[in-house]
Amino acid sequence: MFQFSELVFVYLICSQSHIFLNGIQINYVQVPAAVRNNSNRSAILDCNYSIRPDDTELIVKWFLNEELIYQWIPPQSPQSLGTLKDNIDLDYKASDDPKTVYRAIKINNPTTQIAGEYKCQVSTLADEDFSMKNMIVFEPEAKLIIRKRMDDKYVNFTCLASDVYPSPKLFLYKDIKNNLYNKTSFFRIRLSIVEWDVKKNPNTGKYTVFIVGVDHLAELEPGTLIHCELKIPGTGYVKLKTLLYYPDFYTLGNGCLKHWLNRNLIFYAFTLYLLGNY
Image (cartoon, rainbow, N blue to C red; front, side, top):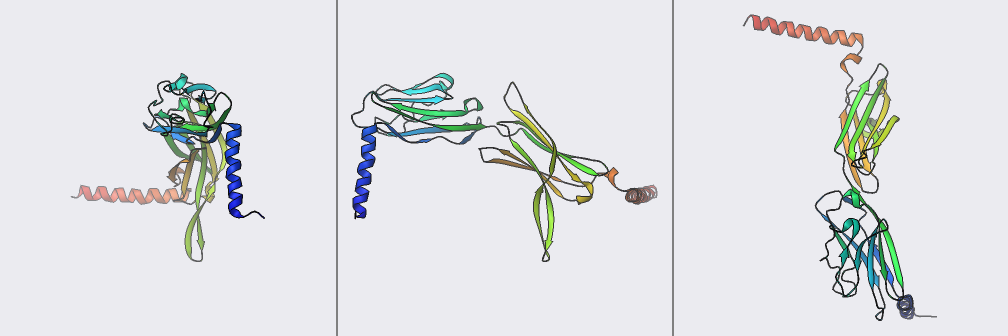
């Protein structure tokens, strides 16, 4: 039986042998999953790799959607190319090792134009390896609006988000009161969606999206909270807009309407009487 220490030794030998036999190995690529558009912050994309001590003619390349955007051929200085020619900080150093010092790229102020698939490719005279990851550059909505429209039976709630990138997901909910064990709590249920639309601005690439949810007038209590939730997939970005629901004046029954008018007319008449005798 092998002892634990012997197994660890064998594993380390095999791991090192794999690197030496196969030459280059990309250990990992770190790319931010999502960054905010035009935020004046930098995004660092790192490509950690291992090479043999005797490997020669090292070349490190970065691609965006298959377009070459960065190249480093030691001992020369790195170059930025193509779409990101003026957006990469060429002085950024990922390590002090002369064989990996310029392996990463630092992108200044990412915008939606440079979102997509990033590929790191490392090669020598004898071997090469590559790895890819996606980066989303998102733009929060310019506006998020929720409105209601009523008839004698139903209430339609419209939620609209404008100038957002990439295309978001919208959801409509209402709060339901739950009186259980003499304790009041609330939970949310989704409204039935009866209409939706997505439009892309051909000039900016941003999206305007709306959905319409419906509920029965009889099932909506005055003071119910209606929520519109916006999510941008893959980013973790969530925004909530809330409407405090009350029925419109004209939807009240005739008896309620008559009572409301009588009460207010009496109040106004009494006020005018007091002012006339002041």
